[in-house]
Image 1 (cartoon, rainbow, N blue to C red):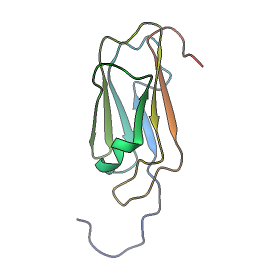
Image 2: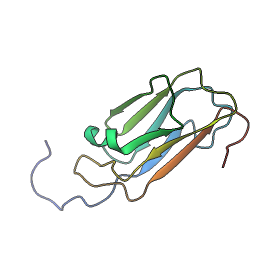
Image 3: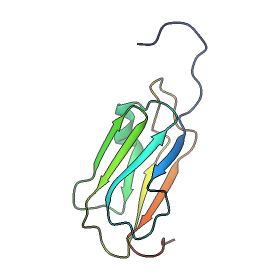
Length: 114
């Protein structure tokens, strides 16, 4: 628990980096790591992240501190673009929402579909 006092946190969490980078082509599945500027509230992830199109196999999503991981199955459809949608429902540990929604696209083919 943080010590009392100090200014109220009003700074929204920011996505700093994605590994692999958004826009990756020839993506074969596996882990995508999202690095945030501050700790993310675990309870906000359920409503805050979606993957499109729906995938029949289970996608594992985990948060630990500032790192969020999305584990895609390794049998994704060929030549298809998958999008991770991070909505403003994602909050930091102080309840501050992201400033804007973010869309991260990954393609199993050699181009990102529009």
